[in-house]
Length: 486
Ligand code: NAD
Ligand code: 6OD
Image 1 (spheres, rainbow, N blue to C red):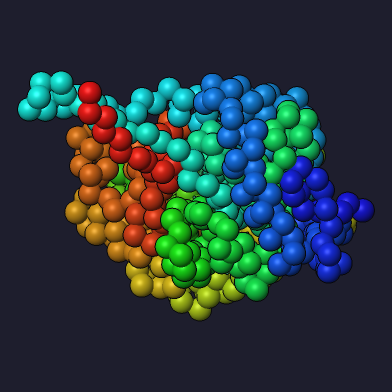
Image 2 (tube, rainbow, N blue to C red):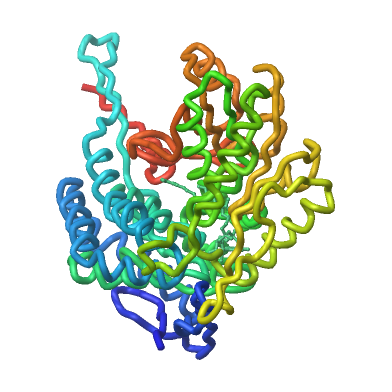
């Protein structure tokens, strides 16, 4: 049985209180190990270590040296690829093929891409004329913001954590990470990698625990934290924002979504079906960018629903190491209960269940797992809760539309604004749609394809701010304006 300890000041430590909680495998409910729950002592120690590291050897590194060190971290993740893969799959139950193609490579790339992009980014500089003719030089100087709290979700644990830790460290900050209580493993393993690569003690710290009245809240309300970057539910984001208001700490938030997929009759239908399959069902629907509302232009509606159902029927559930499986369980039995409550609600709200709607018969040894059927509904009203609330499961509602302006209205009729996907071969229409949709990311004839140098983030209640590439600079650095009279 594994024991997940905190990583503080370069060392793995247990909780002084001795309080631990269980980490279970979502595939069969078996016990993976026990997670130490951080209390004030561990959170204080982690924040102090991170504060001290801000002025230690880490601060002496040049940007180029920091970049080299982070490239080494990326290389070491790649060398220990199988360790990360095992750890991520055990925690999440996701198919190893997905973790192999997406989670672990991105976990490494997040260190190289941001360090290299940020190192290459120039600071602004202007020459000023002055009455004496000598002039002045006015330029921007960026420095680290300080100690960053990184609060992470469970759906893409390594990928989403390193999406924050990579740029935070590239900018010279130190971090205290609070991984999700469901997925402690890869953040812990990264502590080993940091030591192996010679990252100074205190630069990367991890405290485990729950959110409210536990490690998450202790960390986000800690006065020694300079800024908080968060990925998770919008409601949790509201709590964290309140905590951040004390001391006017900066925040960056990537939150929930109820993302629309829009299929025009002029699209390549094969690609639209295949793309919607991925955007609705990848990672068992537990991707914030997932499509839970699909709008299909009426002439191709029936054909689209038929083909999407065929695709969903072909999904094959199984354990991560099952080479034939392409569909894992949900993260936990608690999340399964939540998703199933929406499945029941859909029926109560008058949905036609096109496929799914329940729990698959997996048989032993998977009976205790958090399995769920991929589910497609039609026939719901636009204000049904299933159509308006984020479910975060492998399900979508498909509805016909007749006009472009109508579908723009439907797509934007939500408090969320993370992303939208548009399937059309008409370039002018694609451009109009991209301009009209109230979201942070628009995919045209694709999904989850993104150069890491571009901006990532949501509009409305899907988030605050943008990260990715140089867009994280505003959050991860303090910009000083310097004017030198020559
Ligand atoms: P969550 O909000 O329940 O938890 C996220 C993290 O916040 C966890 O580490 C949790 O322990 C911590 N937390 C909870 N309450 C806290 C509090 N009061 N103070 C401090 N920390 C607290 O989210 P989740 O269930 O882990 O993840 C699923 C959600 O995340 C979905 O809503 C999904 O859309 C969203 N998400 C968004 C993005 C994005 O990029 N926009 C990416 C992934 C997931
Ligand atoms: O790919 C990324 O950088 C990113 N932030 C993805 C978010 C996925 C949400 O579940």
